[in-house]
Structures are given as structure tokens and as C-alpha cells.
Length: 191
Image (tube, rainbow, N blue to C red; front, side, top):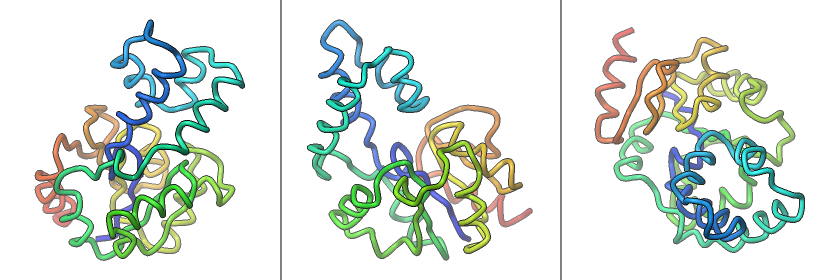
């Protein structure tokens, strides 16, 4: 099975760190749960929702660079899936350097045969061009993401989709915990 993964919020629990950064920029008057919820839609959605200025966006970007890989932890049991898959690839809006730093920190670079990052010049999700590229190269069987925009390109291409910690009915499968992943695998293989 060849799996295309989103990075933030799917492989790694990064949103608490990003929420903290945005909270620091917005100040104490904004609830962190609300910030988290807006970030889970997308970073650009949060920018629009809070009406962030260019100065605030630059401050966020600078603070994000200070986040340590120790602050971005892998989700429980995801490594079992990475070892199970025939191929794992990543499609993320994160920089290649940022992704590589975290993967190397956890010794997970060995699990991925390819990745597309913001540095590669593809349009942002939900545009499907990066997915087309990875699918043509690696014959993707399943796309796993935590947000609707992570799976929409796969749906467009007819690839099976799985949402992690998200209950949107657009996904073929939904997981609250990666321990349940192998139930999904059995269903995918049966089709």
C-alpha cells in the first residue's frame, strides 16, 4: 500500500505549538481553543478570520522558525503504519527544511521515498497538481490528512481518502486514533 500523508496534524501533533504562537501574537483576549479550531481549517483561513496584518504574519513566521522539533511530536502508533506501508510520501505546505528537521529528529526520514513541499512551487491544496505528480510517480492507494483540503485533491483523482481526527463525511474513512488504521487497510484491500 502506497500512502500520501499530510504532515502537520496528521503525522505530527504540531497544532498546539502553532496555536501557542498565534496566541502570543493575538494576545490573551483570544481563546486558544478558538485559535486551534481556526488553524485546523487552514493557516490562510486563520489569517482571514483574525484579520492579521502583514506585520503579524511576519511575526508568526519568525516565531514558527523558533519552534523546536521537540515541540512537535508524532501521533501515537503512526510509526507502525509507516513501517507497514510499501511507500510513504508527504505533501505539505511546510518548507522542506522544516519537514526534514523534524523527520531527522525522530529518525523518520527513512520511511519516506518522496515529498512535495511549499518549496516545490506547486499550487496550495486543495489544488490537485501536487497530488497528480505524486500519484503518477508512486501510484498512491490512500491519502491521509486531518483537514478537508488534504483529501479534496485525492477525491478529485479517485484515490481513497482517510481523515484523521476529523469527522467530515467527504472522507472514505475516518480515524480518531491510528490504532484503528488496520481496520481501514482491510477494507481498502478488499475493494
